Amino acid sequence: MNDNTRSLFLLFLLFSFNSFAQTPPSLSKNKFAHYIQFFNSVDDEPIKNAIPNNQCWDWMQQNIPFFECPDEDIEQIYYYRWWVYRKHIKQTPMGFVITEFLPEVGHAKKYNTIACASGLHVDEGKWLHNRKYIEDYLRFWLSGQADSHHYSDWFALSTYEYCAAIGDFSLAEELLPHLVEHYKKWEQLKLHESGLFWSHDGNDGGEHSISKGGLRPTRNSYMYAEAISISRIAKRFGKEELEREFSAKAKKLKELVQTKLWNQSNQFFYNIPLDKREEAVKSWNHDDIDSSRFVKELYGLFPWRFELPDNGFEKAWEQILDKEGFYATYGPTTAEQRHPLFMKKRVKRCQWDGSSWPFSTSIALGSMRNLLKQYKQDVITKNDFLHFMQVYARSQHRKLPYGEEIPWIGESLHPKTGIWLSRAIALDMNIPMVASQYWKNKNSAVVRGKDYNHSSYCDLVISGLAGLKINDDSSIEIDPLIPSDKWEWFCLDKIKFRDKILTVVYDKTGSKYQVKPGLNLYVDGILVAHTNELEKLTYQPQNTFSQLEQNRFKVFPNPAKDKLQLQVPSTDFRKLYFSLTNSSGKVILKKKLDTSHQASLHTIHLKSNINSGIYCYQVGSKKQILHQGKVCIK
Image 1 (tube, rainbow, N blue to C red):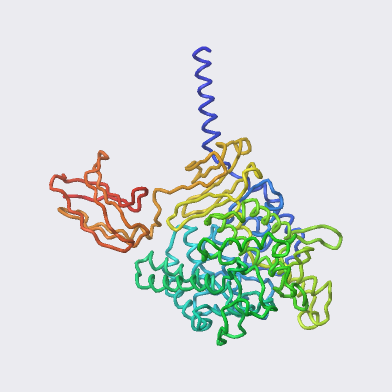
Image 2 (cartoon, rainbow, N blue to C red; image 1 turned 60 degrees about the vertical axis):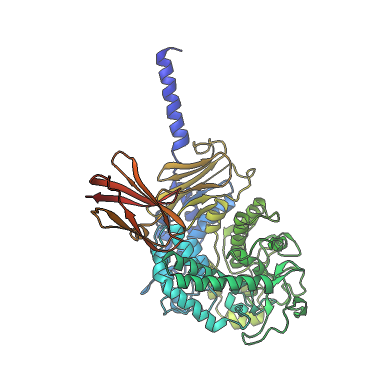
């Protein structure tokens, strides 16, 4: 090989390496336009809100993360659910809200809002590029002008997770006093003498269930998450007394749920049936519960979504794999199939005695995601998560009378046949009592049972299958819940984080996207983290605090002479370090700061041999910089 040939060969290798390993794929948005064209073509759009069908594709290009995978059902429903979601974005005098039903319904409150699925609305909406939708929505619920105690909710957790996802906790600081007030109002309304919270099943969004009202795993999991989230927000902003108060509330609820609602013999979380909050618990022995109301319900798996259980309760998950438990062809049942009252009294359109509800499926899959990521257990595998996501995607269809199948999301469906029950009961089965009492106008019935926004899906793709999680310290985890032998590639593009764009790419061989083989994370087109296998990947940005939090660090006076004062906000770090560097990059002063997680003021004594000039300073842990700047020393 002569010199010219060798040079050309080296240039080729250099070009190949750069293009193969460094450049992220940019998913062509037009590649997915056909989905929206099809959804629009089979929709007569009887109700329009802020973003009508003819503006939908433009809106999606500006707002949603794009996703591509080998599973056509999962991919199609991903875009379908964003298509449905934007139908429910409603402009009001108080800003944007997210609705559950498109038509006006009698049990909705101001602007046709219902709090029941608000947490799932935020789960989905936190990934949208326009932050105003969710920030307006959370402010609306906590404004004092919305009926925010009609249904169970988890506003504090939603606020905390939203702020973590966008890398800015200023909204959490703003809403903190309202979240505290909201929690204490729930205590006035629903706290039982036992220390647990009571709830009617309908107020949990699960009316006509087998166990009915009582001390339910639902509300108590939500309230635990609320307490721990308020505690974390308080800690973040140096409110120590508030942090201790709500940390204690969370600890007490966790203990009560794990000791009172857990059945050791049956290895499951149960409802303790009570018809009223004022009713005393006659016996905590589950054997004394009326057998007609003693039932395993899918709600017993909800605590994992809200990160309540300690290790040791994972055996409960066997029920979702059991065909006599919750396992069914078109999605998990809301009650165990072995119970004598399973789907026996079908006279109401909204029944939670066994039907598969996307609402409960969403939370159960969120629980399963957390179980796989946060617990050491051998009951549930990544194969199971992928399978249930495939079932969930497949269930979101409806066959038209002439045979065509279209994407569809309604209220509940038959777990064994896939028929959407709210629609079937009202129109096809024509049960007289239902038809006369609820469905006097069949056109209204059709609209009510269509494009129902009572569940999540896109977030489960993003945070579950693709495995993206942005932590409260702004570290980024990619931990896909996809078995290594199932998918050879996927791409999640256009994730907005602060002012950056994240791209997650898995390409087993590198040939699909022309990237480095394995799992890759790009930030603004730059490869920042990589692993050869489909396994957990973590990236810690150099600057993990938002600009607002950066401003809470204060170094003064500036200019300084013999000492500096350093004000440090409350952080998640017990020990931090202050360092001073000269223009040559040499560290001339380093001091350890004991912050004990609390806001604190520190004095930095400057050595007499430090010359006058401009110096760079940094404050951070051993692994990351939290704040940096320049100081003039006289």
